[in-house]
Length: 134
Image (cartoon, rainbow, N blue to C red; front, top):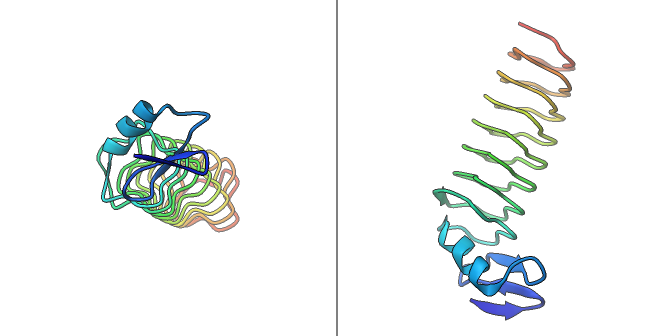
């Protein structure tokens, strides 16, 4: 672990802000990331493998390109995540569950091909969502 530009940085270029994390906390967080590179501020992750460029992730798994994550599981291109589960191409996520191609998500649940989501529930092949049920 080295200190560079006000960040703790591990050998895989994963980093943690020195103002928010002690070196010991950054070391602990680094141990939870396996084969991950370029992640920033991630902590509490469990079994993350092959993550790339994640930012502020918590409890993520199988990430790629995530951003402000929390509780993601099979992520790919999530952005403002919250409680995603079987993610794929989510974007402005919030309460997604069985995601696939979500876009402007909010309270999705059984998603599949959503697009401009808001308060979806039993999503399936939505396009201009907003509470449409199957």
